[in-house]
Image (cartoon, rainbow, N blue to C red):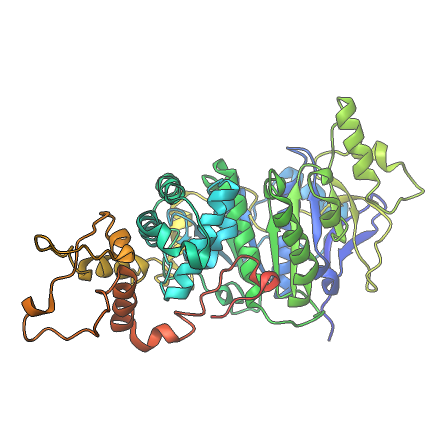
Length: 520
């Protein structure tokens, strides 16, 4: 039996406007000026998808979406809208919601590893120059080659320190980068850790499959990210959302067009994703938007004006809800005309004029039909949500967290052995500078001297002075360099696991399905 469409709203003459579930993965747009009703529309769409059995991920930038977890309350405006639209089956009921928070204060903590975030997104997050971004990519490459796990910020800081001391030793194999560049990276990482805390990067990392669950009644869980603090750091917010989107793209298998999407991802304040983003990153976002629908995922961007999005992205958003725009200046008027041109026109009215006249809770709506054809734009009264419109208090939020299916799963931070511990062991086990005998010719080991950071030119101790128990070294072979000590330490400490996908097949979650894929 096919899944029935869900109601978005109705026209003045009671013509219902539904979203076709099979077209839910064709993505969408909710646009409009502040205070015109975008959040209520978002809540109505979230409820509709959840009741189809589709799981939802959304950021809550104002705290209002937390009300999804509680049944709605009677209100004169809601009652009037129910009567206007003749909603016979309308009932005030909650939606199964799970709360998340990067810092773990208002929801379950969300973590990822440095390795999964990857150098491209980290470079944007740290606002690196081209040279600094190259240095960061080099660190990831060397960590992969040496089998060093990059899990948290201290791992990355340890690698920066190591490269500051030993940059010249890697120049022949990886290219020359100034050691001072790695020192700059260390300082930027200190600032980043102050901004986001030490809890975001680490383990246990979020399992994407945990976002795909339903409740006992078959409704899709709604995952609400508390972004009230996060939105104050727009670059971090946009980078996190893009990382999560890339993880969905990489981890989920191809399923084609389903009766309804498996997951719908709502990206609020979507313009932040594209502000000052490098061209290469924007191109990757465009590719993900185009390809992720085959994974059964729909992406819905929420922003003030459609022109906030690149045309190549905007052209892929088949289901559109446009709330009112204001046209006070020539620039505003141009934006209104641009927004109007994105719709299939309706001969009954002028889209350009109606956009500026819409009341709160009214919108221009165009959705795809069963064949994927955009419908004629309609002036629609948006259906009211059945859950609460507004935030939860602290006690209600605490109650939701207590009964969450993920309670206790992500709260405890795990700090297993990774690059930080491995490099510390390597330093501890490195041979000390060797004394020279008077009149003896100095035998310089450049690798050893550079690794120790001392510029030492001490000669090795003559074999005749060694203890009888000391292993004999082949004639002419110098003492182990720091790099050799590191390698041996890794082999002793990690053993066969380094040969596994956990160690040597570290590939970044940087839209990796498009750049080469990630192995787990």
